[in-house]
Image (cartoon, rainbow, N blue to C red; front, side, top):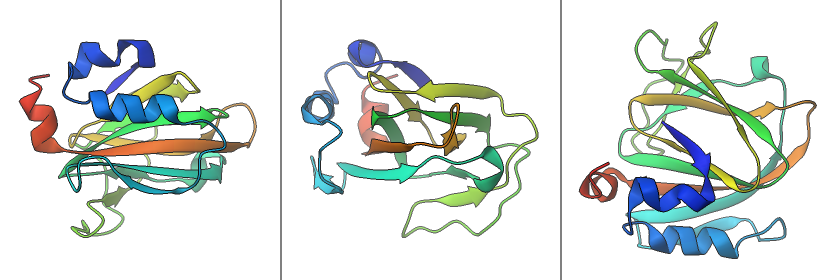
Length: 157
């Protein structure tokens, strides 16, 4: 799991994901919803919005084939992180969605406040849960980059 400011993006990914960073820098709160191909199925972005809500209304998730790099375009939310070990599967892994839904731990191992100018990256060993209200429920706009694992492994993080 990585959480940092966008200015430090290259410290983690070198120049391997510069096209994703360039895409991120062009986005703002008025960017349209949609899925945007950057490098086909290896690297794409989903832009969308939702209302944050209390923690007890959300569940953890994890992915096997992609890492998630998440950034908020407007508003703020809490993201929780926890290692996969010890979490209970709420559903079977979906290869179509590359996701498994997991129950919430009593105490997550990490919390990140995601607001504009920050990003968080979650790897296959990282269960994560977003959409959690920071101070009070609020609408947010967000982008999630889906990065095929071989692209990141090639970056030698």
